[in-house]
Image 1 (tube, rainbow, N blue to C red):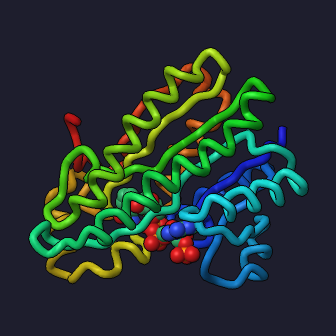
Image 2: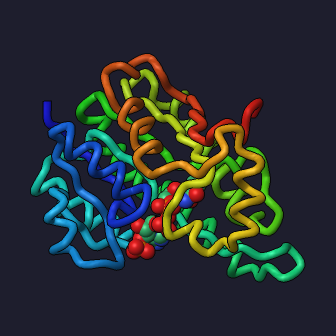
Length: 238
Ligand code: NDP
């Protein structure tokens, strides 16, 4: 059965791998993008919708376009996220609030809007992309880690609030993944990280996509409020 799927930040990195996994399964997949060439994205079989998730009006317009072309969103993957790393001493309030505004409040905006259609349909699947550092902590990433930890409380509250409406809320917490986001790390930093990972390597975006696809599938019908680590064992025990 072909579902209407939305992946935020599906134009590159982990989001694009997730979008491709749903396209391969035969779903109708919309993605949000700010950068990149929409014509290229269309070749990947997705509907590119321009949207900055820090802007409520753009979120509203994106949903209207998706609803017109694919119908109400049945599966939402809130993947868009940013980092602005800095030690606390040097972290400006703007560095803190802007990361929260994208990663946490941005997720609130897209989830709240998706909920409208899901309540009407009496079903829905929501998967939030957090991070291993949300629960582990990470020096220089207080803003990012706070936003990613916030997603866990957010998802678990909604799992309780909307479980009776047959809407599930789950979190995937990736470890280090080979994407633009981790390209900024130096070779020494990469070596240091890999040394901490039991599987001894970074993840490929497709390995995150596989967990997301599972949580949105019928096989995961009784899973809600879960945090699924896909981190090569880095966060074991949390
Ligand atoms: P990238 O930096 O490669 O991509 C980030 C994506 O988020 C882009 O599609 C970007 O769109 C989108 N985005 C950022 N800000 C906004 C915004 N305001 N509105 C709409 N879209 C926005 O990151 P990854 O693919 O690596 O990361 C994807 C998710 O996975 C993020 O939430 C990240 O925190 C999380 N994650 C990543 C890990 C990693 O090691 N890479 C580890 C753990 C979690 P645009 O192209 O327009 O900028």
